[in-house]
Length: 297
Image 1 (cartoon, rainbow, N blue to C red):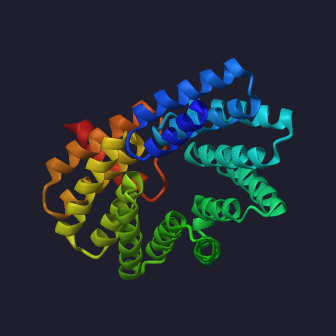
Image 2 (image 1 turned 90 degrees about the vertical axis):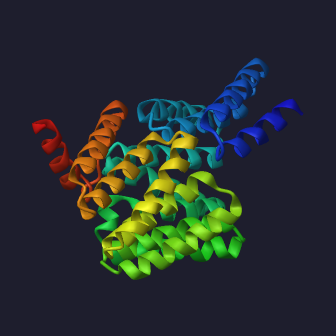
C-alpha cells in the first residue's frame, strides 16, 4: 500500500515540482529494491529518467532509461520495453542524435501497435512528428499530429489533446501560418490551464510567444515569454527556461532594446553550456549572433 501511494504521489508531483518528485521517486525505488520487485524497479528507473530529462540532465536520463530497458527486457515486459524505447528516443532527440532517436521511437510505435496500446501509439506519433527531420516535411509531421489528436480524442485524454493541438501549432508556425499557430497554441493553453498542468502551460505560452512575435506583436509576445519563464523556472525545467530567455531576447530586439537582448541571450547561452544542451537549427543563428556581440562587449 505504501508503494502504491508513493507511486501516485510521484505522478501527482511531477507537474508541480521536480525536486519533491525526485525525492519520492527515489524513496519508491529504494523500497522496490528492498523487496526485489524487478518490475517496480524498472518502472521507477524509467520515472527517474524522465525526471532527469525534463530537468535537462540528458546524460543521466539516457543512463537511467537504458538501465530500465535492460531490466524490462530481462523480465519480458513488452509494454515496459516499448515505454523505455520511446523515452530513449526522446532523449536522443534532445541530444541531437535524430537518426538513432527516430529508430527507437519507430520501434516503440510498432510495439504499442502490436499490443493495442493506443495511448502509446498516440504519444509515439507526436514524438516522431517533433523530430527536426520530420518537421522539415511539414505535411508529414502535421499528419502524424492529426492522427495522434484523433486517438487522444477517442480516448478522452485531454492532456494528450492539448499536446497535439500545441504540436499542430508548431506545424502551422513552420509553414508560416502564424495566425493559425496562435489559435492552436491558445486552444492548447486553455486546456492546460484547466488541467492545472504547470509545465505544459509554460510550453504553450512559450510557443504562443513565438507565434505572436512572428506577427509583430512585441508586447503580447514578451508577456507570454515572461509568464512562461516564471512557470518553467518554478518547475525546474532549465532547458526550456533557456528558450524563454531567447524569446525575451528576440522580443527585446524588436522593441529596440539591443543591450537587454545581449544580456538575456548571454544568460540563455550560459545555461545551455551548463546543461550541454544543443540549440535547434531555427534558434541557433540568432543566438550565435547575439552571443558574438556579447563577446565583443
